[in-house]
Image (cartoon, rainbow, N blue to C red):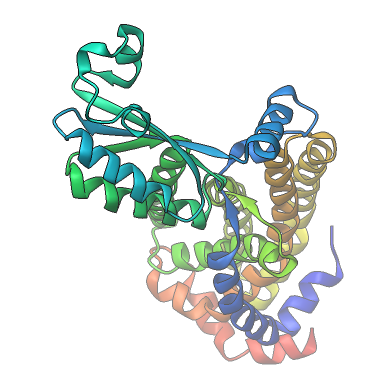
Length: 363
């Protein structure tokens, strides 16, 4: 068991809380502004045949993504030609392929080959292929799609644009909303579980606050190292680290309550809790770190390596937060916890309110 850490925490718990507050705000800002990528093909090894083929297409044909524009068959050939001309002028568009671009309105539809009609005119829609110089899931690509839609809707209000770029754009919009909702639901569920387990109004917020701090620090580090993360990193790390940390937090808190019930003051109860629980927490955290780091070192896909790196680092950060910051919060809020928790040993907390400062100093 760790011997010096419990004494350090109780002696400097106010300074630890001050550091906790000072670091929390920049950690939240960094987490919210870390760069993300949505193009999963970019995470594949460069020696794969598909990646090599995509690279050659970019180099030899000056194209990255392809947009498939569906236009109502009722749009006249002249309007189609005007629309295609405007699309060709859009920044980043390398070329536009369409039947109306090469065959003018003077050629009757009866001369159109059946095979070509099946491809370009089908189901009451006309197909226009727009090749882009931009990669999918980039700001330039999304701006280009917005401009193409503005042009398309001038001639067909119900016109649609499909393809990799449009799918990536929808993916960004959907995941931003879904991931936020998942995080909120996860936090609310954890709050409810802790509240019911401990019959407390304050403990759920104290425990979750410490865990969210660990998650914010872990997810904020890539912002300062200028590392781009896969878009699923936030939801994966947020849920897994929250689920793993809550076990450590409950272990410390349960032992803290037991020691108070045994007649110990908050200072001494925290010291015993950290000392007796540290072995289990450190062993679990280091095992998690070793497993994730091993995968990160051998994984060829950047997405897998990034997620495992975050998980491994998050395990270490979580251990430090649970052993230092959470005990400091529990000690500082011991009076509040006693008043807002059913069955909490209030007598010990009240007796310690006048002694905690002296004991912390002596410790």
